[in-house]
Every structure is written in structure tokens, then in C-alpha cells.
Length: 108
Image 1 (cartoon, rainbow, N blue to C red):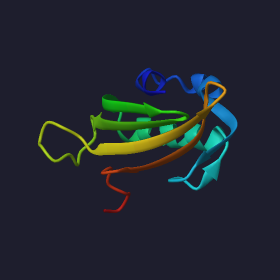
Image 2 (cartoon, rainbow, N blue to C red; image 1 turned 180 degrees about the horizontal axis):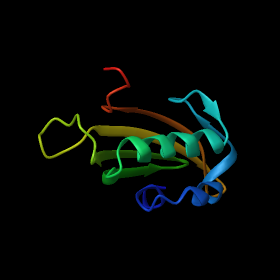
Image 3 (cartoon, rainbow, N blue to C red; image 1 turned 90 degrees about the vertical axis):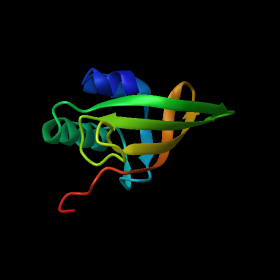
Image 4 (cartoon, helix red, strand yellow; image 1 turned 180 degrees about the vertical axis):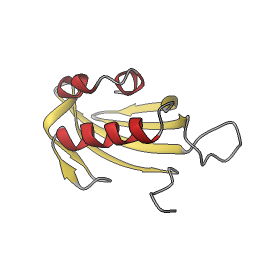
């Protein structure tokens, strides 16, 4: 998923996410809302990329700590916001996502 994000490959989402993928942070179901969210990030932050710092796997769950680069708001001047995400995987596709990030919300 992070490789696809960094390559701006929105078409890869169909192979990465289940059709009924649930994004708990976005409050959405399906692939299209994720594609729109990614497109919005690419438009707002043309240099955005995600670097995975840690990835832990336990059964059907994957926990990831990552840093967004090319986005203001990191703890240090040369880093971006940190994200913590947990995915549930079934049949080789991501079916659910929970997460938090330090990405500033619009208007903050």
C-alpha cells in the first residue's frame, strides 16, 4: 500500500483493498473514498511520501508506524507527521483500517 501511495498509483488500490474495505478514520466503505482521500493529499502536498518506520504482524492484523514527509507538522523540523495504523487482512487484501495521524486537519 505504501509503495502504491508513494508512486501515486491509485489503480493499485483495487488490488490492495477489499471491495468492502472499511476505513474507520474516514468513516467510509469501499475503495473510491480512499482514492479520493489520496488524491486530496497529493493535491495539497505534491511532495508527500510515506516512510514506514515499523511494521508488526500478528495473525490477520498488521500494525504500522510511519512518517509522512513533504507535509508540515512533524515533531522535528525535518520530519512530517507520524501515523499509527492497524490493518486487518483477509485473502491477501486489506479489509479494515484503524489509525491516527499527526496530520493537521484543514483549518487548524
